[in-house]
Image (cartoon, rainbow, N blue to C red; front, top):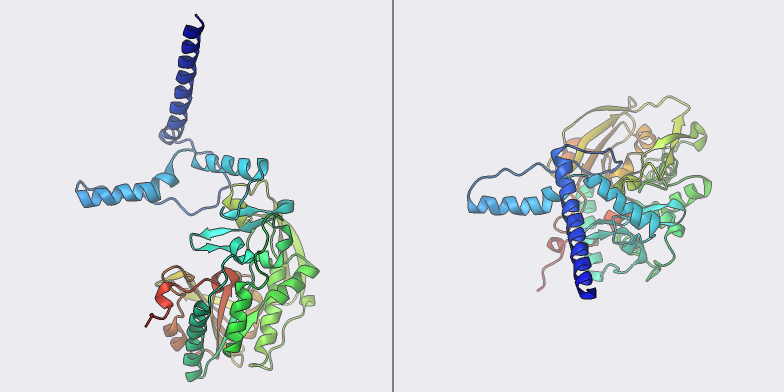
Length: 395
């Protein structure tokens, strides 16, 4: 009787497990059919469209590939709910956030961008697990020297500006179990190599450390600096520009009213579907005097450009002109810096990746004929190893 009872109990357990398993599989399908889609604060790009289907073998092979890699993982029912539950479990309950996750949860509810893409891990870069090699540094020096020399031949000055990663300014909230392997990091390597090569590099780490000492330099729930931090960055850039344009006078902090208001939707909190849990105020910098620079009509994004080209103009034609190659960190600097130029053209190219170096846009430069080109990068893009296509061929 005991053996029979055990067999019966085993069958009941197996049946119950099977029912639960099948039910769990059917929940997303049922949610899709019934169009059940609860609102979840998950920040991500729009789902990919369903690939078109034609009944021939090559097309079907591509359809299966796209379904597996692009469509199914972004379109199954209750996906956002399940993503939120996963992060609630990992981040809030188990405290198991790791550097190879997209977002690393730090101490005191600080969030850090970690694994941005397969080639770029911000936390491991901060830990300096893989410094740049001499060959990689030489390649970058050659690329920037070529840009500088080409511009010099046109009578145009060249300046590289680097915005630090948040973790470089606020490292103290990174969990202590993630220690640094080296003190000299890739930013130090790049700045030293380019400076020795005569490239004008503005390393904004000192400005952001000063901003931190006086207020909130970076958002706790986002990867970007605040307008307050951006103002200190602007001041350092403006001071560096004075050697080329002696009449340039940076605005004092007293020209702005610094404040806060609720309602920030931090990008990092959104990436883990918890912007309602990780709340934060928006930092504001309201000018006390009217701004003179105005945004004018730009154009649509071109090939390998992340966003449309934008243009700011000032009525004072005696001011210099510039083309700025930018990323997202320039956004908060524009209102401050645009006051010092008669025309500023902002181009947002795709960043360096495993195949291509970020574009330099020579045709726009030739068309605009600026007095200076500002090549701005956030640290994590500036310190990317050059792609194999940029490395010199072995002899």
